[in-house]
Length: 338
Image (cartoon, rainbow, N blue to C red; front, side, top):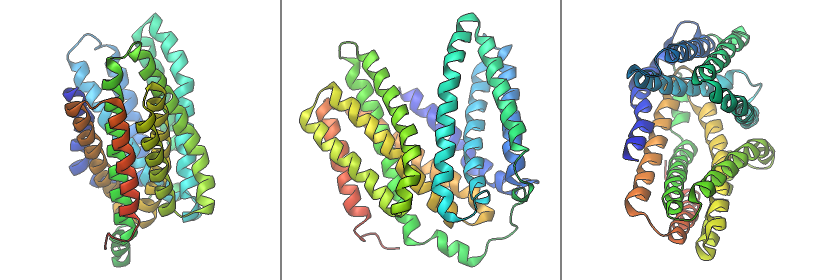
C-alpha cells in the first residue's frame, strides 16, 4: 500500500520541476503540446506490446503515468483560450470531465472483452485511441497555438489575491479528505463479508456521482460563484459525513464515498475555473503543476493517515464530516487574510 502511495506521487515529482515550464515555453503552444503528448502516449503503449514479460514494462508504465499527468495539465491550461468568456470555464471543464467519464465507461466494456483474448489487443486499442486524440488536437483553432511571452504585473497580483489562496487551500484539503476516505473505506471493508464486492460498488457509484457532478456543476455556476460552489461541496460532504458517522454501517459508508467524490468534482471544477481565470497566461501550466502537486501530496498524506490509524468505519466517517464542516467555516469566514 505504501508502494502504491509512492507510485501515485512519483509522476508529480517529475512534472513539477520540468514539465510545467516546458509546456509553457514549447514552440507551437499548448495546442501542439496536447498533440505531442498524445503521440508519445500512443508510442509508449505500442512499445508495451512487445514488452509485457520484461522489466522494462515498469519503466514504460511510469512514463505513461507522467504523460497522463502532462496531458491533464496541458488540457487544463488550454481550456481558457477556447471559451468566449470566463463565465463559461466551469461549463467547459464540466463537459470535458463528463466526456472523459463517458468515454472511459464506453471503452471499459470492449477493453475487458479484448483482455479475454489477449492483453496485446487491449493495448492496441489504447494506442489507437491516443492516436485519434492526437489528430483531434490538430483540429483545435490555430489562435490557441501561441503562448504569451511575458507576464503582466497585474496578472501576477491577481494570482496572489485572497480568493485564489482560499480556494487553493480548500481544494488541497478536499483532495486530502478524498484520499483519506478512499483508503479508510478500503481497509475497513477488507475485514467485512464480501468486502471486495462492496468496495467495487462504492467505486462504481463514485464514478457515477462524478459524472453527475460534471453535468450539474455548470447549472450551479449560473446561480452562485466559484467560492460558494466550493462551500456547497464542503457542507454537503460535512453533513453527509456526520450522518454517516452517527448511523454507521456499510450503506452509510458507500453513500458517503459517492457524495464525497461527486461533491469533490464540484469543488474541483470551481477550483480549476478560478486558477484558469487568475493565473498568468504565460505561466498557466506551471501554476497548474504546482497546485496539482500540492493537492496530490495532500491525497497521499491523508491516505497515509488512514492506512496507519485504521479507524473504525463510523469514526472515519465522522472525521470526514467534522473536517469538512470545520473547513467550510474556517475557509469562508474571512479568517484567512491575503
